[in-house]
Image 1: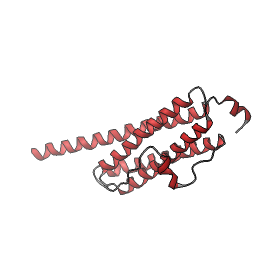
Image 2: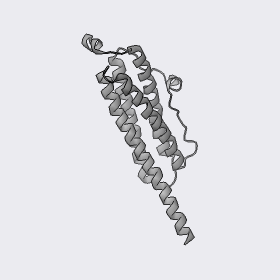
Image 3: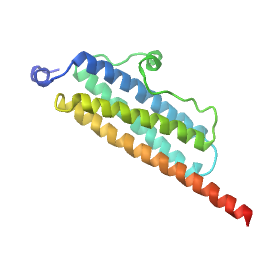
Image 4: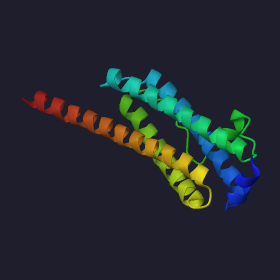
Length: 171
């Protein structure tokens, strides 16, 4: 990292690197959870939702790329082994053992809400102290908020479909 870049940081860089590596671990787990869940899921609206979940997985991978770049810029070493992901991550990885679409979406929603909390904390930690990291994490935070909204909408749509189906069965 450049000298001036170091001078303008007004925070504990070691602590920031620790948090960024935890976030990196969570992004890898989120990427895989979205990616594998999208391929395995079954149920209503699968054809519409699957490509969107694949897009979400790609965005999670892009988040990991941004975080790795920042870790390296700060003079740190990104987490090197997938075995470390579970140890460092605060957000859970929920294996898609039940392929029903609502279950997959609920698992992803839980992960998004954890990610939102992570990036809010990172934004608070870096605000006014590390402008570059702040910009990166607020960009990621905005995408995580969009993911949460997408998932909530799909779950609502599925619930409405079920209710409409029940009404049709009763008539």
